[in-house]
Length: 256
Image (cartoon, rainbow, N blue to C red; front, side, top):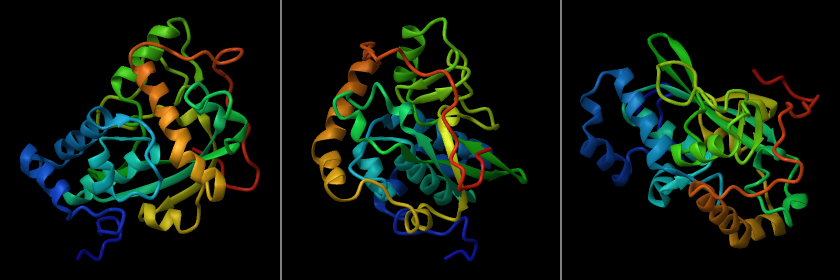
């Protein structure tokens, strides 16, 4: 096993699992140059893993691949596993986002029960001697297009899973540079971690009865709303989606 913590396998980054190794072999990604490998993994997670809500943030990458959908944290785990499986060092950057970013996805009747600050993450991959921030893989193109169509005159949006000031032309496609789609929803920065395992050892969410209700009922409701959104049926938010930045927390480092 590598001694570099940014390339090591972990229980969540289970990149030696059969499904992950088969995916890489079937696509021929290992024969690509490093930047091309990163692009292939990124675009796969962005569009071939649909935006949706898994049973828990702490799923191994192979489980996320099997589900075929994910949100910021589970897609981060899968992307990191794919990158490390192809010898690309990467790290986990943890945050919270204001819950308004999820409004329109979370049904209004249960929205008051949602935590004010929701765990969030993105991937930072080392390419050509610098760290590239990757967050733009969270929303698949169908969801993003539905939002652009629903709000054609709006660039700043915080809702429906998006937090951006460039809705009509967001930095989400691979370019070898930083990508973002939820950044303006961030209200707290926990810094970087060698793995998602290390982050979740310190930060967890939705325990107890709320966690039970989320896993059993609410996430399925949210996924049904995402699927309707993907078809162009955009749920109504009282007073419309937010455009202003959310309030920042004062007890942690400021988000970049």
